Amino acid sequence: MGLIVTPISAFRLLAATLAAIPLIAQSNPVPPAINQFGLDLLRAQASVGNHGNSLLSPYTIEVALAMAYTGSDGRTREEMQRVLHLPADDAAVLNGFSVLARELGELQTASRLHVEQAHKYGGSEEPIEINVANRLFAQSGFAFRPAFTTTLRDRFGAPLDELDFVHAAEPARVAINAWVAHETRDKIRDLVPAGAIDATTRGVLANALYLRAPWTDPFKPDATKNEPFWAAGKASTNVTTMLQQKHYGYEQRNGYAALALPYMGRQLQFVILLPDRRDGLADLERAVTPDVLAGCTNLPSRDVILHLPKFKLAPPSLPLSSTLRGLGMTTAFDQPRGSADFDRMAPRKPDDYLYISEVIHKTWLSLDENGTEATAATAVVMMRAMGRPIEPPLPIEVRVDHPFLFAIQHVPSGACLFLGVLSDPR
Image 1 (spheres, rainbow, N blue to C red):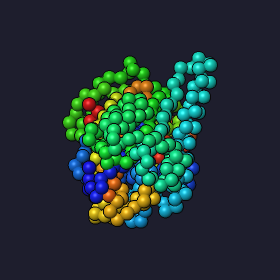
Image 2: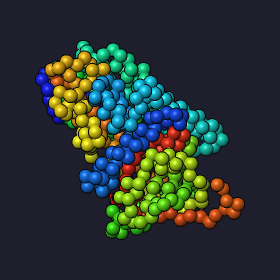
Image 3: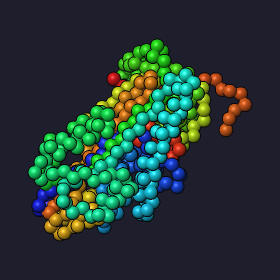
Image 4: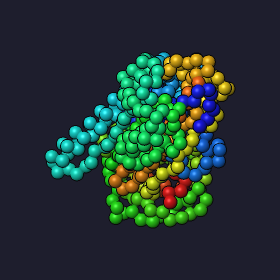
């Protein structure tokens, strides 16, 4: 549970998410912040020896921590700002996140209208489904500052829902997990583990995002077959591989190929960064920057014969507190003791204050012939102490048959909802 200082209460900030980060104006500072933060986390995982499959939702983690950030102050605020790559302008931060939420809703509405029109003329397309929901589960009567709860409600769309952690901690935990499961279509269950909520808990801030995105051009199931994949870049094994020839965004770059597969409506895309070498993933991870990801929103169209493995990722819950401390977010975790400052969230006293004890992240993703379904959840546990060619080129054949980096990206802004590495599709 982390460090505990005098009367022990807990504030648990939860975020269950999945899907599509819709960021719009290029002047919005939030999309590049999300992408840089995601790359920081991905590299940190690799640096501790995690060279297998990885899946993160930088959007989910950033939103959860940004909600805590709005309640921070002093040195704690400065550290969180740096680690989250946010500007010092509070208005720009709040506007950036609220714009994302609005754009997501508009994206889904546009997708539904498009499909309704297509159905009138005999089409059979399915719309993109995005569900975004925020909630502040708070201990009844606890003195959260009105400015904090108002900001969460008005800028993050997180209404207040009072629970009784003091006298009914386990029923409160069950209720929060049920809310998360509902908002993520039952893909994220038991986000808050047994024992994580008790009579000391004072709140859980939950952010849930779910995505189901059909391809613009679905793969034909009868073309799917077993093909070799060099797992971990070393051993060849047969995996279920999809095949089709279509025009995709494609560009050969220095040491890797960039490929973009559009989802219905072309506002979201699945990005593949495939190293030229079978063992080139580590070098690619070090080389990728937010500018590289942003450049994937406008790849030149090429005729591509694509071999792409089907895969499903359901990694276990990932504790992130040590990673975040390593990135420089230390006082938020009350290190050194007595340094956490969340005075904008609730009044801080020398012997009675809130601090983060743990950040837990959980994700799920499935990719097949029809498209992608994905979800993620993050729990921030806070304790209270006391150029087009003239002649069309020949098709490019791309065999995604060795470890690669991938992202689910919002095309207008370049923001990545999900960021991951596939080392072994089995």
